[in-house]
Length: 422
Image (cartoon, rainbow, N blue to C red; front, top):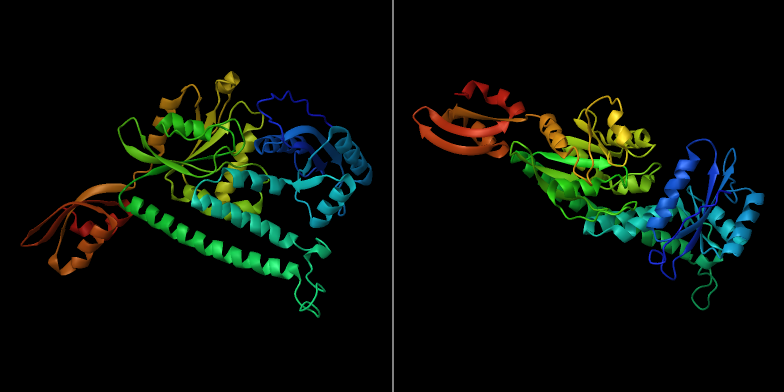
């Protein structure tokens, strides 16, 4: 067992704070120690006081109790000796595993996904964020209703209940499915509004940069530094959840949108990725992606890879990406790294490298629009209407030859009307 020696301040952990024991099975499929350290941070973000971590090496988790019988006995003894309130497993548990650990240890048990969902539920502020969290919770709980025992049965309860009847399990499943359908419909409406907003922004020629990256690497601090957004920035995992958009002024005076997104972690539950896809897909609409990483972390390269993999899964391949090496004030050695690709070293806390980052953003922005003047013959009024629909018209006059339009349009559209360009 690896004992966590935390010096908790009394004001940090008030009376009633849950005392937690973390358990994990090391199968060699991932870096178990790093994952366990991350689980400690998640538990602390949820308000728990972590008193210990137990890691067991096995070829695979036990189907009945996650850990082996010997380690299960150690867990029970530790829970009794240290008055543990909750056991948190670094993996997804089945209902059978949860029930068996709880029955043996007489301590409440949750898994990694449940813990993350709990943190998200606390941090969600917008209507969309709350819908996404509830949707993820329901999707996760639906297949886990089975196997919870006779408490889910309504048979044989008295008059009107005899016969085959309907179990509470079936009723709960039907209710959850209805709720999931309702939330999906609400989320679709929000996504349609978001898509319309993006199209309107694109039509008006507005460009955007999106901040992505691992949780707790300083994304919110960077947003505050660049835009004075005033969003919450704490040394906690998932301190902020809802996306935030602010105006960013570049050195040339050009204005773009800067958007912060939800943080990532390794082994992020699929239910959360699915539920927050509309939020994460801000990267799809962005012209430049800022992949922020913690230069002071030994796992900086791994964090960049986690983000890159998610961006690829969202279909963001080919977009300009700037790797932003943050917290260089805590890692002076990062200034000596030989980096490949488009990388910028900064400290969002002190302001070091911010001007360099702004210049890098400006260079990375694609030149997607041009200002042109065209003479559209009266016989092709449809072309004039298209320019109004897909571009920004600065002026429009008429002469005997047709309609003279001064407009800013997409470069990809210019080929369609190049014969009319003056």
